[in-house]
Image (cartoon, rainbow, N blue to C red; front, side, top):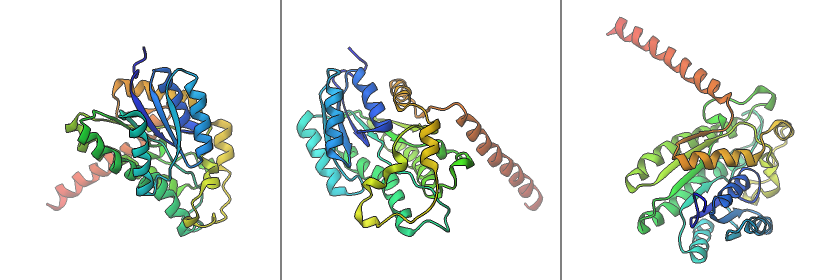
Length: 279
């Protein structure tokens, strides 16, 4: 019997990459799964593969930026399993380009999928958790870029970086909001992972138009040097079992955190001097 035997997890972006890596590791712990992606056939194929591990699994299509679609997806999962214990907000898109090169629709696409999509899922599922008294575990996929900037070799990722900084604030606030109901919240912060996130244009919704042509090459670099998504999934599930808020997969992220807060601490030292001088 695994740690999550008898539990049910909904995983957005669950049909590939990190989402599938988390799903596979949850399945190894006995967890039943609803894998959600834009490509329903791909989600169903992933679910069929994971069902061979002895769990129940279904694949669904859902645009997480669309509240009605998220509501319908939640209804489907509750109808199928009767309960949901884990919500993994993993759906996301990657995009590279400086602020003066990307288009407004590119910006909206990244922010809507990466941030609004998490809001929509939490806004739909949390009231159901509260109504049913479910002490759910909510997992949100952040990034090293919750704390600092990626290696310059990946180019400017200002829209993506903004979205991941936003998720740090969202997840921290969510943790405080749902703690009284006994819910647990985790923020996963990986560095480069060998996934398809930088090829997400294939599922770009029509309302966001065509991609503004910005040369990046970030996807090729990430695919070449990125961590195995199954390892990210393993680390994530281990952190979940421990009830950790921060789940960090790459050791060098410590340096990003230290650099960020050393700079902020130095600014506070200047504040102390100013207040002493001018008060």
